[in-house]
Image: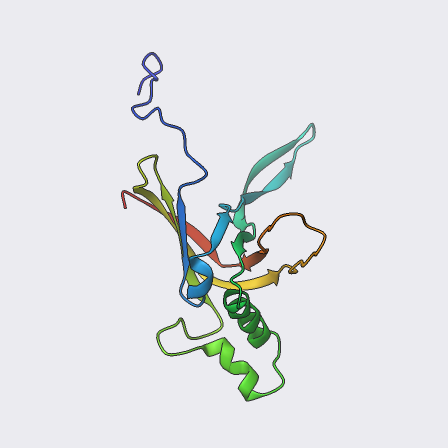
Length: 173
């Protein structure tokens, strides 16, 4: 694409409705995810002083923002409890029995961390890019609000925030 012919080949906009999220340790959460945001990424700067001005240079370390999802809570709270038990296992459980949630069943992402995948879909609901999160663990689980004053049923949503090592993009999925 040159400066004179800068018309893109694909003129469709990205829809916020087209995505799928998967994390091995929380299969009950995956199905109910309502929203997910690709986190921010920042690069620090180094300042070099001269007699007249400070000259900025790119820093050496990337910083990744937190990854947050919102999901609908099932009526038995199974998906909420998956995350709760994972966090409880990370947060200094009081017995070996309580720490079982940290390691889970065989094949369910044993260990304190898990990789995760966010797949972005195009307007035809086909995968176009995959975002892979490395070494993820939950760092916040929001409150569950019950309210008898509502005039219609607004199902309970919950937000979960994750911390992770890094994320990468894979195109042409």
